[in-house]
Image (cartoon, rainbow, N blue to C red):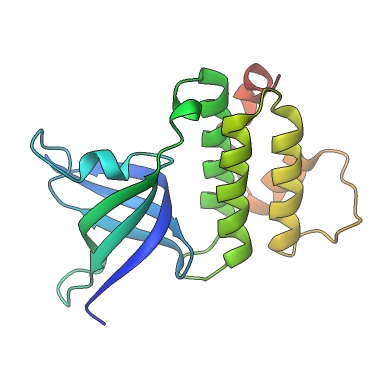
Length: 181
């Protein structure tokens, strides 16, 4: 399979070279993947708006024998979560969600539950006024779906528990009190 299409949510992006980016995308079929998006930082790029952080997009990818990463050849936005991106508190919480998923989920492992959890959480976050319950629910479900805690198990300090699993500090953890209403 040299080329294929998939739907995914852009969790992370890293600039490389003068005009390229490496994207981390959580897809429904393939789980968390990385893909190279050549030339998207150029002003004339038609794909750049479709592969912004938090966008839910359809990506056409090409797997070359020369490159380890698939190459994004086409992109189309399905949902851009504009209301989240306009609100500083909501975007901070969305970045926290992306950090958790990026750190906890291994690459190339299909996980429909996590994909739908991310998508539904972003939709609820976009349309809600209070965010405290949303993040709490997301953390509980993420840990449960990944098999770290049973359904009825209650944690006293969930963030400390997550950092112990990851064996490093969460970068956005210290900012959470500013974003939760």
